Amino acid sequence: MRYHGSCHCGRIAFDVEGELDQLIDCNCSHCSRKGYLLWFVPRERLQLATPDADMATYTFNKHAIKHRFCPDCGCAPLALGTAPDGQPMAAINARCLEDLDLAGVKRVPVDGRSF
Ligand SMILES: [Zn+2]
Image (cartoon, rainbow, N blue to C red):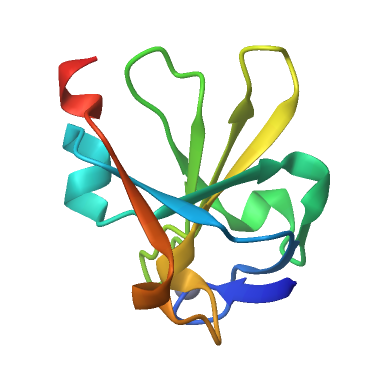
């Protein structure tokens, strides 16, 4: 499947390819505040239509993950980081994907608050 995603105003736009079989629903202080439902994919499956400089960045904790957000509308549609094995990864906020029945996708609760 190929999904199109964007922030609310459209400044950040992207396509993602893959099977969306589960979403990570993390209760950590950051994910819960933003309401993330995250889909983790290898970085090469994400095609960003937005130049890097057009996205703002938020990092915290070990600053290993770059949470990208729109400086205009404030939406946070994705994050970029590296898997433990060194593979570049993207975390897609499924709430920012179009034509997706969110309620029909399995949610995996992650107790990030306790990490
Ligand atoms: Zn925006």
